[in-house]
Each structure stands twice: as C-alpha cells, then as structure tokens.
Length: 476
Image 1 (cartoon, rainbow, N blue to C red):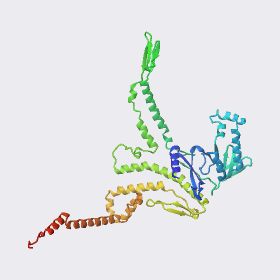
Image 2 (cartoon, rainbow, N blue to C red; image 1 turned 180 degrees about the vertical axis):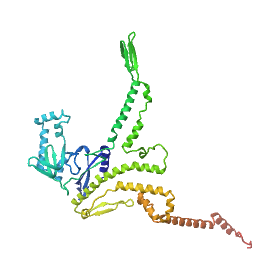
Image 3 (cartoon, helix red, strand yellow; image 1 turned 60 degrees about the horizontal axis):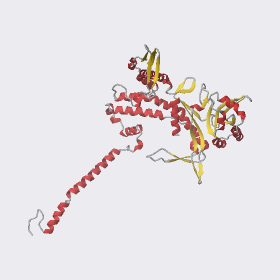
Image 4 (cartoon, rainbow, N blue to C red; image 1 turned 30 degrees about the vertical axis):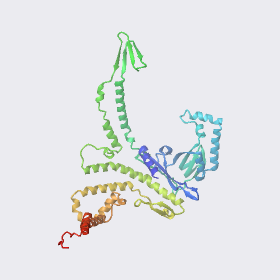
C-alpha cells in the first residue's frame, strides 16, 4: 500500500493527476497444507496515460471511464475464471491470434494501413504474447435496442467483448478515484506544479542557449573570403590552411564581446520559478538575504509549508479517504472469518489485533486528518516555544499544569513512544541518583576506615617479633 501511495504522489507532482483503483485479490498459495500469501483489498495505480474520460463532466465519479491494461495471454487465461470472462469469447480471441501467427494473407492490407499512420504493425501485436484490455465503467447506449445500460462494466480485447456485467458496488460506481494538484475551471484534468513555469523555463533555456551559441561563435567564428581562396586541410594536425590569390583575404567574423558582461537575470528567473512552484529557497535549505529573528524564520517556514499542507490535505480527502473506505467495504463483502492483523507499534513491538467480519459492517466514515493534524501540531509547538521565552509564561505559571505541558510536548513532538516521558520520572531518577551517591560515599568511607595492606603487613611483623604496638607502655 505504501509503495503504491508513493507512486501516486509522484504522479501528482509529475503529471498533476493521480488515479487509483481498489480491487479484491486472492494471492494465496497452498503449499504443504498451509496457505501463504495475501487475500483482501489491494490498491492499484492507474497511469494517467492509460485512462480516458469526459473532462467536461461535472464530477469524475459520475463520468464514464475507459482504462487500458496490457497483460499476457497466460494472465488472461487466469483472469477468465477470476473475473468471469466469457469462455467462448476468450477462445475466439486466441483462435483469432493463431490465424495471424499462421501468416494468413487477409491481414496484410491492415498492416499497410497501420504502418504509414505511425503505429506499429498490427501483425506484430497479434503475434506477441500480450493483449490489450479496455475496461469500460459507466452508462452506455445500445443503438440496436435503444436501451440505456446503466452502471455497466464491459471488457473488450481485439474487438471481442469478454465481459458485460453490472458494476458490483453499493452505488453502482467503480472504486476508481482521482486527485489533482491544481484544479482547472470546467476541466477534470488537473494542472501540475510545473505547468506554471513552462514559459519561465523556456526563457532560461533560450538565454543560456543564446549565450552558448555566442561563445561558440567566439571560439569558431565564421569566415569571410575575399578573392580566390583555396582551403587546404591537414589530416595530421587537423588544421585548415587557406591559400589566396593576390589581393585576396580571409577574415574572421567574431561577435561583439560585450555580450560576456550582459546580465541574463537567470537568478531572478530561478527565484520566480521557485515562487511559482511554491518552493521558496528557505524551505529547501537556501538562506534568503537579510538577518532574521527566530520568530521571523518560523513565520517564513510556516508560510512555505502552508501550500504543501494544503495539497497534502486535498490528496488525503480526494483519494486516500475514499480508497480506505473502499478497502473496508470490499473486505466486509469478502471476509467470512476472523483474521489477525498487525496493530499500532508499541515500544517497537506490533501486537496483533483480531478483526471480525461484523466489525467492518458498522456504519461510519473515514475522515482524513493527517495533513491538518500535522499543520496544527507545527503551529502549536511553534507558539509554545515562543511563549516559553517571554515573561507571560512566568505570570501564568501558577495556573499551568506541568503534567499537561509534558503531555502536550510529547504529543506535538511525537516522542511519546521513545521512553523519555513519564510521570515524575525526573524526581524518581534524581532520588535514584542520590541513593547511588550515598551508597558510594558509604563504600568509600568503609574503605578508608579499614587498614591498608601495608599497615596489615607491618602489624603482622610486629606481632611476630613480640614488639609493643604503637601507643603501648613498653612493659613486657
């Protein structure tokens, strides 16, 4: 799931559009009496080049869609059972391809039509091991019967209808979702962050190329010949010598060197490009001119992040939220027994949580709060940091809970699971430190009171000689 979401974010930044579909898969493999593999809803990325829809529709969810998919023949045969493809249609498709492999001459004229139009050979495609599937989702009008077929899913390959059935969802709409970087007026196709800077980028390329061309003219200038000039090329040195008749001449036409000092304003255009793409230099680590206080730096970073937080919030609401809802609905429809899944990490350990089919059938909805929560945390942490350095915090100190401040900082800094927060943990560690210090002091004092090894050896020698000990009266 994470890898697909990363690709969707890349599509959003590169193309300005991200498309995703939620499908139910069964990838379990039974070996040795045990089943291994994934079984459940799966998020699939759709390339912006593989989907067609009506861009003038009121909403992406209601407009008909055609999705292109290229698979192999073995995969087609596997899906025949999984998706319920018409077996007769699949066999007809394979027979049609076998006729081409046997070099049937009736396809030669079609080949002649495809090649001049810029396409590959139709015969090469039919002889390959791949087949192109076109998935249609939406309403379609039947010209033969005059009937409108609503909420249909139709699969076509090589002019053969493999499947024509009703979309099996609660509202008749496919689990296909779309997110844009920047919405356009009266157009469902969105704009990417680079679309606004195409003209500016052209200016930079044009000016740099013009300067490079001028430098080339300086190094290899054009030449003007006067009279009868005969060029002689030396193969060994690679030089060209010009022989002229009497009165003839060869003159180099060098450009004016003043262009070398001309200001192309490339840096100004690059700054404009960063602002147009909502990527100021401060955000990517390049310091802007002028001295700034901590509050000013924080304000600049917050302003730079605001645009990205808004884009992330829109991506969560338009794509991630409905994707998660679709996965839960698909799991509820296809889950018939309790399963165990990894839960939230606690202290580096992921406990398993048991999910019952009834747990997924409760009424409710997902609310995307990731980006908004991040922005709110950043704002609160910045405000708390600024207040801690003012006298206002000292005035309000009698009315502030130290436990509450600790809980707030742990939540905002997302360090609750690192083991550095605890109720009165500093006092406990301080008491433990004092106890260890006292124990060390008693140990040192005991060692000082005890005689050293040298003193014990002297006492032993005196006792053996029968001499009076130090401090005695000297009487035997």
